[in-house]
Length: 277
Image 1 (tube, rainbow, N blue to C red):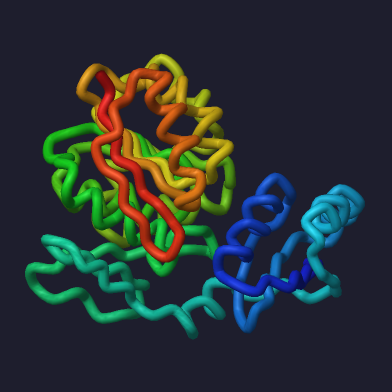
Image 2 (tube, rainbow, N blue to C red):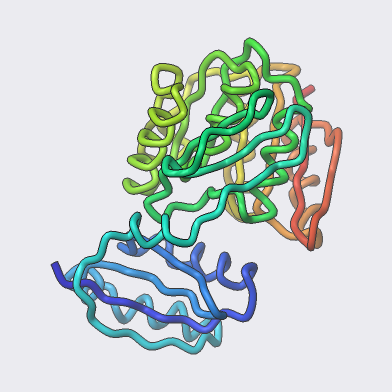
């Protein structure tokens, strides 16, 4: 199959994440960021059907971009060549790795992922912040929802920290497949219910805690649903936004009955921990 490779100039990881979020509604199957260039790949026929819309989005961001046609590649093999394990410094420590890396040392929570180029390798500040806070908020014996699960890294970390069950949701088919693979590799496949879709696929259900590492606008749009699926005392852990956006997220959470318990920032990115009244 022939693919389109779209190359976009991105001066930082943060800018690459923003472009990736803008392109998530289009049929791109994988993303890679290196040397200030974000590369996005989509089947040629599917890309041509939305080419004008994609270019309009990028021009609206004043982005510099170009595209070319390439043959299908083994994206996972290319990822494995460059991926390094992530050491998350928390108590207990968490190590995020690929299947070909050696198992983690005794006493270290071992999270094995199969990204398929999905978001959630642990390298980004938001994923690391979320993972650290999972060890602090108390998820033992609880049933959680990982909204926008990507590779499933947060759902797996929660299970390894004592959660009894996780429902993992993502709008991207590749992310859902990645999450299933990661859960199997981490030995928790029987405890993860993976669903492809948006927040509507859990409508009417109840959870003890919600993990949501998404962008600002989606978090705000989903806040009423987060309030619906959580009982009094339910826990909401959110990231995926900049420190300047934290007051907006806090205001939305407060409006829907949450109390902001903690806020932490790292290199401009923020995590918020809230509890429902």
